[in-house]
Image (cartoon, rainbow, N blue to C red; front, side, top):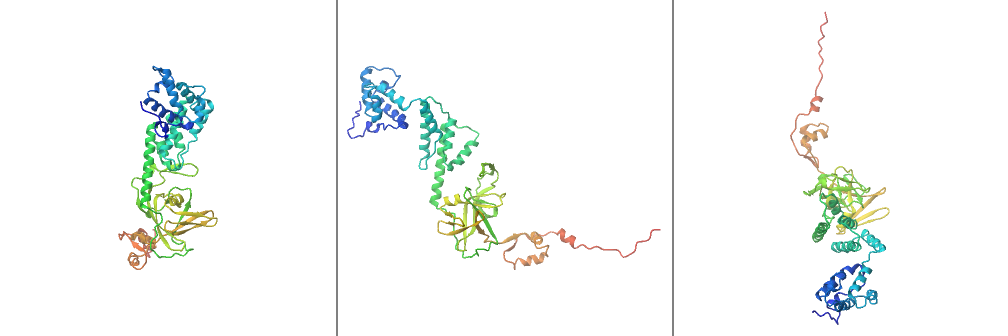
Length: 414
């Protein structure tokens, strides 16, 4: 038989000491019974088990093993009422730490319903904590089904797991708890890998070019405004031409936009990708900026700049009563202007080239002569003719028509 003596505090007993924490009792008992099984005493101490040979002697030995692993409070519970009786002592410990009284059941339900994942807690530890709370209720005679346990876990997840919750709620297949654990763990691993990749690449929202172009502060001609929104989780751009790259896997029907009132609608965002804009800096220069994972929403009348998306990339944004500013990771400062109760960033169209076909230019310029329009392209800055095909203009044809009146008198009626 394996020796269990441990004068140094290490060895089996050193690892099996119960610290009196009621939440960890079930775990401790499982390990303790495993240890007794190695000693051939498990059937002796288990309540309701068959009585082995030499029960009295083995039961005393099991009691001696048990009390070596208890804290002072737990030892006080059994030392008088179950002296030298290992089986009875284990029953007393179970009744005390895993009791079925109504107050304890209510407390356990409260613990389960108030589950919240801690900031530094791993998703595995969070799931284990939820399982322990459900197991404690099961031991008290209260059945916690998979659907209830999954709902409580989802409720306690932070906002970073909202996408997982939405996909799970809309899924046609109902998962049992084992499948749910696997799905949640896989999602967590995927999110971590994406975060690690983005941090290694050190992508930033602000990429300042070497352009020395200076823009007057009050000159807003050609500028595009971005409403600075602390509630938005993604940048929103209404002009498709600003996108330099689109996510081919993006499905508008599966993407939902949730407003502040809780309403959720799909199909609004028509695409997602990278956007290049040129923002004016605090000193009046122009900085080229890349907005990652921006949503293309043509139905919106206002571009939206997400504070959350910018700060996640390392930017710092401060708001004051009369103004605000944003500091990029490279130190570039952008003024955020306040108008009324709203804050705006301004973008300028550095590439102001205007492109139209010859027919379109003909209409824009008030049905100007086609040959003159072609000559204008070489002398007018940023004017570009994309298609030189031209068919007869109906308006011009009608405008050139003249009326002719006959000067010969009509013959008189006879």
